[in-house]
Length: 340
Image (cartoon, rainbow, N blue to C red):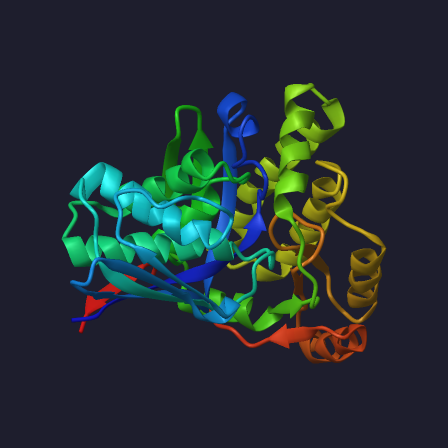
């Protein structure tokens, strides 16, 4: 028997950063995001030899451990160990024996929520294997709790919910870990136009998002007006973006992205840099009407909106910076699990 799962990565369209505590706890956050056809995968093969084999294929890392109730967190594939430890602690209360293989279509630090999406995929595989009574909100919250509470990893809450639910969602975040996911019913022609005009560009760089997120949180705690006001504006733009997509005013998305990028850079230092600014300026000259860095900032993927036929000249221009324009499609399904 083999248990498999996959969960989609996401692009943040508006409101990014307002899902991070303490801003979301104090003011409430709002984000519009969409899942894409890049995935995190997990496969579990149960065994009976009292061992746990962890194989992170994309990282070329492999561990073989004795099956115990709690695995030591030592910086080596802790993401997978953290999921196992929580499953045993909360559900089985006894060690498990298995082999788990994982793979992610995007590298760590890419800004597409790869780490959180992998956690969702692994949780989903255990839920499928052990027949755990968890719904979508339960799985997303458990994945969030493993990362933020057990593993003490800095970050927000949108990634886990996007990966679990899938599709284009307007998400609201409040104190006490309250999250409301609002799936948007968008006409197919509007989605096709959005997908056609959005260019996903990998800068071939990665970044440590935790430092940027930590500074962002400190800015809120210290009541830094410029940062907090920027987050207020980003939250408002998530509403504007939602209305534009639902009404089919797709070409207004570029301006909303451009305005959002100006405010996002005010949240914390390091969100942009000279290289990112150069790419952004060149993209605008090549016909893009707006764009942003995906995720916390500092590197990874960028998205640009290019109406009419400017998409093609934009892609040609972006290749001059040594990165890659990724082929993708918007997806409607979230976490998917099955047993072979």
